[in-house]
Structure formats: structure tokens, C-alpha cells
Image 1 (cartoon, helix red, strand yellow):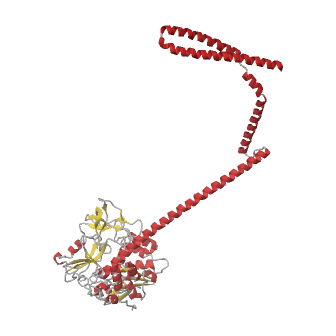
Image 2 (tube, helix red, strand yellow; image 1 turned 180 degrees about the vertical axis):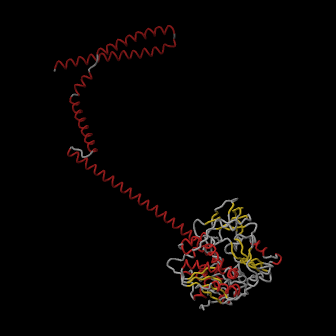
Image 3 (cartoon, one colour; image 1 turned 45 degrees about the horizontal axis):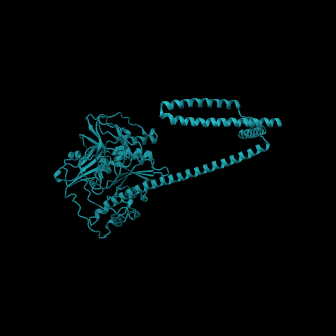
Length: 608
């Protein structure tokens, strides 16, 4: 018998599972429209690969993740893409998200499929690629992409592979009914995952309140080395860390993952999806969903296509709207109230509870904490819920984080036992969200600071390089000037040019010397040149005198005529006559001076 351990805390709420286990799994059928959110798991949203109006086949990939962590989305049936728009999706905030709406054509026509007969003939990366292309993500929790989870860090060997069939939360029976009716597929999928990981031990943990599932799984595991571990019924034994503690006695370290201690957990529904992907080449296009609660006439489990509207499933179960007080997606402990039934089934949807007022009454108003300590007694993670509540409510998030807030699995056990009706889990979720926002803002600020510092360093480096280049240019110019000066001095001393520029300087110097010599020669002969240049021209002067006298006579005659004809021109002519008188006198004086100069020249030549 498999050795079992226990975990701290835990509670025993009313199970209420018999309501949905009385009938076998039913096929939900084909709704009028299928709404397929592009993000149905942890990671990055997928991007559409189709256009509005395009016809697609069943199993065809209609959206994929090109970068980041994620898996594709496939068409659950054949039909026409009606829209790609923001629509309500399952989320505690009631938010909208991008969805592809598919209108089925009723033909349910498959794309071409290539099932594998022997996956062991392939390498592990190829099989992991098939699992990724099938769009499989975890179907029992947050929806972590299965192919990534099946790739543990290279420095961590998985020794124990656990298949989680505990399904400890009240009302939910999806895994229970899957193990009862699809045990062979569960085991087949587990074998594929075990072949990929090569663990030393494979174990399926099932709570002891699921006798029919235990019997079916034991029969399916006959002849294999797979262990069936029947564990005590206690909430939250289906939590990953709690189930690991029960089956191995090991504890996952704070802020760590199961692979850190050589363990990996997978879900029952995930195993079925892996089996269908490998042996049928069928992507994840449907899942088992529990529809239960006193407000439905025929509660049970349905195999519903991904994208099926919740209101359609409720109709199939015989919803009585007048009796509904609350609609809860998920279980009563970790689920959340739906604000609308227009949201679709996703890969992580496992249960919808249509509860009456008597079944799930509205919570009473919150009252002050009385410090009873019951929350700490039932906490399966051995935290301090009271202190976490105070710090979360007062906004002291650093202190809450210091008390390992992120180790909280949000099981709701503390809220369940609180006599003051304090919604403790909601406070913890709020604090986690605020811390994540602060971290994201801090990362942005750090990146901005790094960019600023890098820019400043770059500018300083460029300035230093610029200054260095300036100094190098100044140094080179000084050296060139000194070299030029030295060469010029050397050329002046030797009379030779040592380079082209020095040669030009020498030629200029020679030209200057020739000019000085020529100027000296001109000085020697300057006296004779001055004498010859100062000798007057007598013929020219006599001719100028004759012309001046003739012009004077003419103007005198004109003056006489003007006096007789027009008195107005008298003044003008008189001025002109006076001016010519001056010219005549100057000419006569010049002629006299010329005669004197000629006479003196003749005397000096005679004496020489």
C-alpha cells in the first residue's frame, strides 16, 4: 500500500457531489454560436488566423501565439467565422476580451487528421510539439500550457509524476465522471506524459469518496506500474502542494515549483486531452463540465464544446430561473459569481453551480475580527491569515509579502471558518493584484532609469571622444607647424627645399631677391630717367597756345554776336571768355617757363 502523509489544516465542507453523479456524461450538443476567447490560459493571448466570413473545418487552428507563452485555439466544429470582437469572458471582474464567434453549419466536417499508432518511434520534442499544436493547457487549475510544463528545467529530474484525481472541492464531479467513464483514455494520456518525463514513479491520487472512479482506474491500470493512491477526503487535498505532501511527504519550497523537488502534477482532464491529441490527432475542442445546483432539474456532467455559452448548458440541464439566487463558475470555495450567462466554456471551465437562496445564501455583512485564530488553524499553507488580512486591508503590502502572501493558494478555508464573515481571500487577491501592479510599475521605472543612465553615459562618452579628437587635432597641427618651421629654417640655411612646400617658399624668396636687385638697378639709373622725364615738349606747348588763341578769338566773336542778339547769354559768354583768358595766361606762363627750362638745360650740358 502506498504510504501517505498529512498536511496541516484543512476543512470538511458538505460535498454535494451526489447531485451530478447520478447520470452518465451527456453530450451537450451544438449551440447556435460558439464564442472562443483568444486567451484561455496563463500566458499570452493568441492572434486570429482567420477572417470574418471565412469557413473553417472542425479541428482547424483559428488562432495561435507567435511569441511568448501560449497555445493555439481550434474550431470546435465546422462553420463560418461570424465576428472577431470584444465579448464577455469568464473572469471575476466580468471583463470583456477579444473573442472569435463561430456560427456552426451543422456538418461537423473534420480537417484532415493523422493519428499516431506508435508515438515511441518519435523523439520527445516532436511529441511535445504535437501536444502544443493541439492547444492543450492544464484543465484543472490556472491553465498552464502543458507542453511547457512537460519541459522541466534541465537541472531538475522529475522522479514522481502525479495525476491529480482528488477533486476535493464540493459540487465538482468532472474528474470523477471522467475517471469512471474514460479511464482507458486517462491511463493512455498518463503513459504518454510518463514516456516524455521518464519518472521513477507514476501515481494517481483519488479521494476515498469516489469509489466507482477508484474501481475503474484500478481496472485500467492493471498490468502497469501505475499506482492508485486512495487518500482521505479533506479539503483542499486536491491542491497541488497538498497532494504532493500527501503522496510523497515532501514540501514545495516557498516561491518554488514542484519540479524543484522532483515532482510534477497533471490533471485528469489534461491526460485525456493528451491521449486524444496523440492517438486521434484531435485538438482540445471539448471538455467535461459539471452543471449542478438545486436550481436545475437535471444536474449532471456534460461534454461541451469549447465556446459553448453557459446559458445553453444551463438550458440543457433544465434551469429554473425563478429559483436561482447565485450562479457560480467553479466550486463554492474557489469559484466566483457570474454576472452574466453569456460567457462561454473555456479550457479551464469545470463547473457551474445554479444555487438557490437556501443552498448558497448571500454572505452576511463583514464584522470586526475577534482574533479567534480559527483561520490560522485551518490554513493548509501554515500562514498567518489574520496578519495578512490586516496588512492587505491597510495597504501595507510589503509586510504582507514578507509574511509569504504569495504562498496563499486562495483555497478559501479561512473565509469558510471565519465567524466574522470576513472575505479574507478577496483581501488577499486584492493585495496580490496591487503588488503585481507595483512590480510592473517598478520594472518600467527601472527600465526607464537604465535607459536614461545609458543615454547619459553615451553622451558623456561621445563628449570625451570629441574632446579627445579635438586635442589630437590640436596636437597634430602643432606638430605640423613645428615641423614646417623647422623645415623652413633648414631650407633657409642650406638653400635647399626639403619638400614641396619648402620648395615653393624658396622660389618665393628667390623672386623677392630678384625684385630687390632690380629695384637697386633702377635706383642707379633713376637720375637720368628723371631728367629725361622732366624735359618739356615745346612743340606741344606752342600748339596748345595757338589753339587757345584761336578759340579765344572765336568766342570773342560769339560774344559780340550774343550781345547784339540775346542779352540773356551775355553773362554765360563773359564767364566763358574769362575762363579762356585764364587758360591763355596759363599757357603763356607755361610757355615762358618751358623756354627758361630749355635755356638752363643747354647751359648745364655745355658746362659738362
